[in-house]
Figure 1 (cartoon, rainbow, N blue to C red):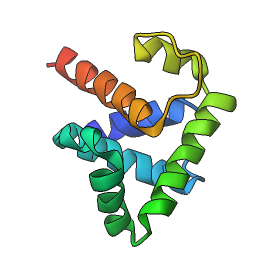
Figure 2: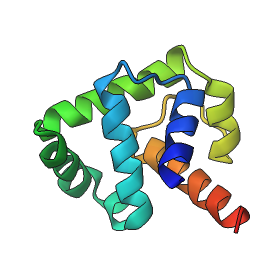
Figure 3: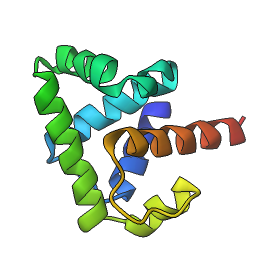
Figure 4: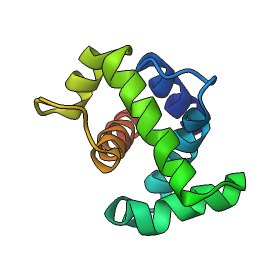
Length: 114
């Protein structure tokens, strides 16, 4: 159920499954929802964990997640991103900020349905 909500949100933001970063982002969000400490150390904890799961390098995970964030910002549903961020975004968010926005939104929507 939670996995489907993550995928639906990511797709609604304009990020399709044709990007490697789509899978990395979905898995990263799942990890962050289980343990928010990943949000405190994205480069040192989260990227290596995703890389290990997908047999990739941390740098490729970082690059591919940045790519899908850029896709969302440039071609995707930027208005939805602005709405769920709960604060104005004047520039493309960093990976950490983007993950924080999505994790917070999904955590709120999960508690709203309980």
